Image (cartoon, rainbow, N blue to C red; front, side, top):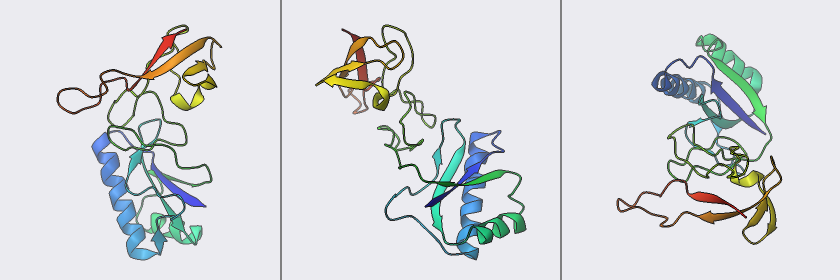
Length: 170
């Protein structure tokens, strides 16, 4: 089981990263923490609400709580155990939001997939229901749509062409 520390007092994106880095350092200095080898998620990431978080494997949550309390971090972070699988990272920056990759990365703003052309709903790639090859059902409006990579996939500056995946009406 992994432990997730999320910065909840995140008025400023940069300050959220600073707090996360300080909390990680305090935990490393005071208790034994490690990256879960079965669910690798090194570094600080942003969740679906754009809050900075990091995950690690701790053997004693009471020790984690004590370190947070001793360093006055309890009011600005949330601690929870997570069992969900580590999700796919953003193709642009590598940020992992959670088990489902959102349509737009909360870290860098990269658009992974276009909205459904029928209902105009933002639906992540993982939530479309495959019918055949590149034919899918939209989970919101149940229309049949096709998913394909945007062409050209790369722009002249070697960056991905956004959105990475285009949803087309069948």
